[in-house]
Length: 89
Image (cartoon, rainbow, N blue to C red):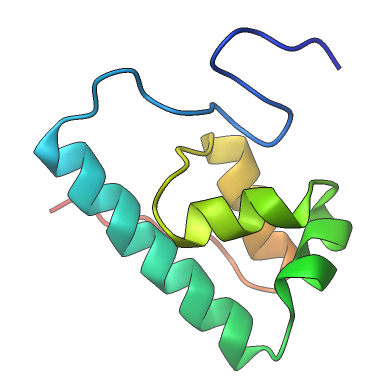
């Protein structure tokens, strides 16, 4: 896979200058993913294997330190046997 500066194989990477609303949204999604993963009794390592990424990427995302692409969010949901549902408020 080709790597682009600021991007990696799991998603869109990190934002250079995220806004407060971006950070809030990212943390909200991260909390939802972590809760869904824990409810499914799936480890970070197992989820990473299922979606083809590193455990460290799952960990960074769950802490809100990573800005995944929409495609990667769909892969994560699929890896947990869930559907991605987005609400715009």
